[in-house]
Length: 265
Length: 265
Image (cartoon, rainbow over all chains, first blue to last red):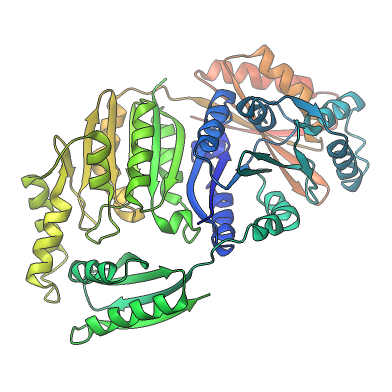
């Protein structure tokens, strides 16, 4: 099965000042496209740590690596450089990227508060991308995204600002990933009430044993001393999910449990 | 400076069905205690992947490793086993853990829907922890947390359910971390309006150069074509932060920018 890793960069994330909602959103999108996310990593804005995290991710050879954050024009934006270092490629001024940055500045209005030399410097920074990389238009902010390949890994860099990350993903990433032809999984959720997870555990064990191709998951929650358990069954085909769910529901007959279900995909 | 890693486990996280708020909360707590979080990693419930992620984290020798998720009684709860495998220690039935689990079951009421054999099995599972580990009482749910040491790394395992993770952290983890004596950082946030990040970039470059012990960060956001930038200055002492902030505010004089500020700690 195709797999992906997500690498999120930002001191605000590792200090708990912001929640990594980009990773959640991307993980859901990837899962919908039938690509299994095997790891989400988050490091701060320190050059060496970013380079190490990229190197380690590439060494695991995922089919897809999506990196978010660190694409802006300020000194704490270090993704382009760290990526070039990790891949041992040079950074070059990309003429397409430069045009994208210039058109973004025009779109955001002729901002008279931007000094000419500062503008030139920012453009140079955001348009310098690793050799062989393709810039991706950013219709919301300034910095273009980046697409490049390393061995069998397709790499995408997106800005950390959620609206920008989503916009570039929708315009320039999603169709690339869809073309990879992932294996979209089917799933069913059975909500179980009136029975404890402790009693369910051996039953789930039997279920997992009887249906090795079905991933059996259990998410308990408590309301006072009343437990409610969401059982999620995930498999490549709807038939496998259905068979497992029926086995599960049959096994619960005679107990005090009540169930309700929901199918996905 | 003391550092920590957070490892969050759960298929629901890597599929984007839930946002990893545990990591955000823990990261903020660790930062407040003066412990720098250097990495947050998230993998699914697959045994091999959990073991690999734990092994890699331990190889980086952080002072603290906090693992969340996978401590329950169902088959998809694999943290205890993966931890034992990664540390090459055996799993043993811990008598203190067994007592904790039994008292949790009593507290949650004499649940007549739990079958005797299921109960025995669940207790055995949740009380089997790596050799040398100390169980931590869970006042909200069933599974005890775990504390153990590996070389210079202090490891804590907490349940994935946020209320349980927070309760165990507050009761049994925080004071252990406070004793380590972290370096609590000082910070000041300067909110800048009326100036573009592009113009600010060279100024921030000079600021970072003039104050090498101060971490200079920039968080831009847009309201239509109006940008507003949060500049965060972080350093070991309040004096360093103050000096950098004054330098920064002086540099902005004469520009069209307006600033407002907030001190932390």
